[in-house]
Image (cartoon, rainbow, N blue to C red; front, side, top):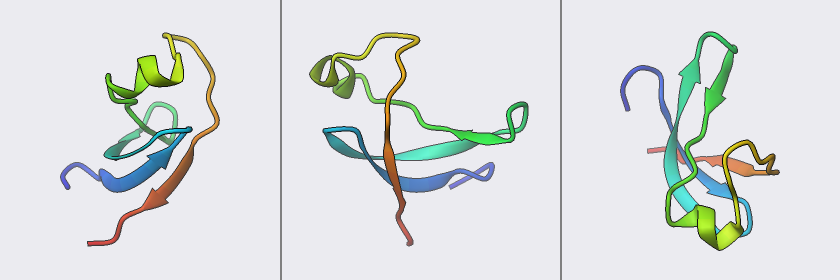
Length: 58
């Protein structure tokens, strides 16, 4: 992973693997929600979700 990204397994209802990337402006990480997950979980831009994130160690 480059630029400080970390490989994770994310769960909202559906579970998927992805990478989170550091966001220095917010001193946090960004988790993209895959396009296939958004309609399944009925998410739109601006929605708030509770997400479980597990680090995947390589």
